[in-house]
Length: 512
Image (cartoon, one colour):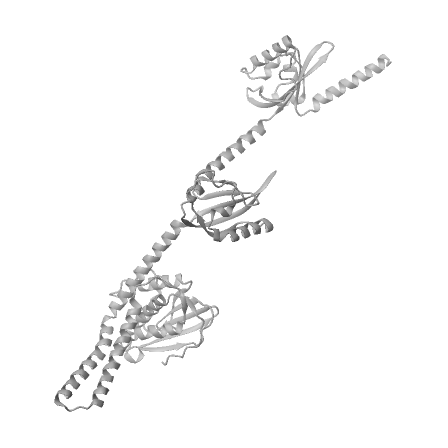
């Protein structure tokens, strides 16, 4: 049996360990007697509650509780003394503590019972969870804000597991699909779309899953519950979440309004271009009338001449046949003029098709030649053979070139007749096909050059300023450019540059 000296040493060791524990513990360690009087108060408790050990030793533990909580503590102590049944001992729970400054803060508290020779005591271990509670509140606020955003987002949003099974869809997507809540969860993502896209959807999901590639964008047809289809853009991402399974997150943006607006713009542009063509031909009416009147006069003269000869009996069948041949030739000439005019002004939907630019230029030059001959202007044409094809609306490109040719003809009016010449070229430069129209007129003043393609800007006394603006828009819509530059020989050069594709068979060069 240990002697008194050894027992004293052991006691001192226990006390040292006990003191060390009270000093080293981060948590608050508080020991109270059976009546709630504080007997020990650790350094951690001093830090958490703001009281020094000297201030609280001998005080009732209620000094560390908000006033509203003190009656509960008295009841717990009283119940324990009456029944000896612990209600909160051994159970961790969340309570509120009272700091010396009067600040109330949250605590995680666990209470244990200690049986000593002098009676029952209780040890409480408390941890300040203010930061955790603040973080939880911030997280809850963020989650609520995110939920609010998703619930009220104007675009469809869905989540799906990595097998493609839908987990959630937001109200905007339900409205877009014209379906009720609870109808989609558990189904495959592909169920929302036109069945024709199923393979592509599955392929995209696999690609994102296997490669980790983010931000896949698809253009798909959404299959609505009422049988209608809606063209949509789908943005798909794989989202990695800490401690949780990865998910697919998708956004679906309805393009119905956008496509409707684009269609309205196209219709308006088509109307404007059609009106502009009619306006152009209105301005050319005099030249067109002159071009038709010449063969009509010849037809009328031939008819009158042979009618008189027939009346006088002074002609033969061979002479009549020859005269009818002249009449037929002149009628065909009128027909060609009418055909070119009708093809140019016929109202039609914009249609992109392979276009041989040299054939197109030949046709439009024939139409513009009606004005050119009356204005005593010669066309000098240089067309490069075997040019690539254009994917273009041929009538719209003709409209642009005709506008440039007529502007060049007008620019030549200030020149003497011998110098009235417009040069038209086609050539290839890299991946672009170029058509240029050059004149030797006065050119465009430097102060006006940056306004040339603005609507309603014109240097003509009777112009309305839509020709170049419309031409510029048409070429831009074809992915090209229309630019002006000064002619080194004096005058102006307008250059159309368009992207091109595969080469077409050679076209014979038009004679100068």
